Image (cartoon, rainbow, N blue to C red):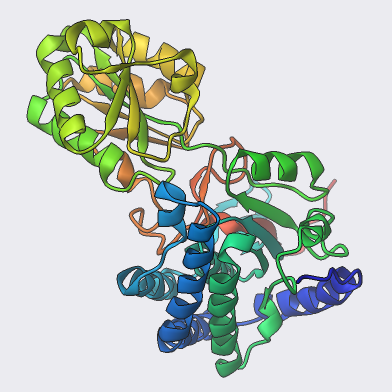
Length: 421
C-alpha cells in the first residue's frame, strides 16, 4: 500500500538539479558509454523484468483488462530485446549536444552560431507501456537531460524493474543514479509534484497516455508541456492509387499492431476510385479480422459494413476497428482530415504526383506520408533510435520526439573587439 511522502519533491529536486548539471558537463563519449552500460544492464536483468511484467499482466487480467490495452502492457523476450536494441540505437545516434545548427557572419565581422544544448530536467508521465521508461531514459541521457519517470500503476512492477536496471547501468558508468529519478510508488500525488515542477527542478513535462492524462497535465502543469494527443490517423486512397499497393498499405497501417498510436483509424476513399476499390479494401480488412464501420456511401457499395456513427470518425479505436468514408478527391480528404484529425500522422496513396504534393503541403500534421504505411511514424523508423512520443503541437518539437528534439539551443557570438555605435 502506497504512502505519499510530502517531502519527496524537495529531496528529488535537489538531486535532479545536481544530476542535470553533471550530465550536461559529461562528454559525448561518456554518455555513449553510459547508454551501452544501460543496455547491457537491462539485457542482464531480462529474467527479472519479464517476471515483473508477468505480475503486472496477471493483475491487469484479473481487473478485466484485455485487448489492445493488455497488448500495450505485455512484454515478451522479443519485445524486451527490441527495447534493449532501442537503447543501443540511441547510443549509436549522433550526439546532439554542442552541435551547430547554423553559423553566419554579420557585416561588422561578428560570427554568430546557434548551438544545441540540453533542456535540463524532463518529467515523463506515462501509463501502461513499460517500454516508455527505457526509451525516455535513453533519449534523455543522449540529449544531456536528467529525467523523472512516473509510470502508471498497471505497469508499476515492470517499470520499477526496468528503472532499477538502467540506474545500475549509470552506476557502472560512474554517473549519478539520480539522472534517472522516479517517485517512490505510483501514488497519484506524485503526479501533482511533477506538474508543480519537483521543487523548481523540472524544465519540461511530457505526458504519454490517454486523453484524461494529457488533459490533466495540460491544465495543471506549471512548467511547459510537450503534448502528445490522440493518434487519429487517416489513410486517403486517391483515385490514382494502384490497387495492390492500396490494399497492402491500408491493411498494414491498420492491422500491423492495432493498439499503437500510429495505427490508422480511418480510411478515406476517393469517389473516383470506384466500387472496386471500396469492396476490395473492405474485404481485405475484414479478412484480416478488422470490423469496418462505413458512411452511407461505403455501405451502398459494401453491405457487410457496419453503419458508422458521427462519433466513429472522432474515435481512436486502438483496436481492430476502422471507420471508412467516401470523399470527393484530395479536397474532400483535406476537409475531412481538418475536421477530424488529431495532427499525428496522415497518409495518401496515389500515383498522381500533383495530388501527392497537394496533400503533403496542405495537411496539418506532425507526419504526412505518400505511399507508405502509417506504421513508419515512429522514432526508430526515422533513425532516432527511439522516441518519447509523437508531438502533435506546433511549437518546439513536432512528430517523433528523439534526442535532437529534447534539446534547446543557445547563441554563441565570436568577436574581435567590436563595439556597438
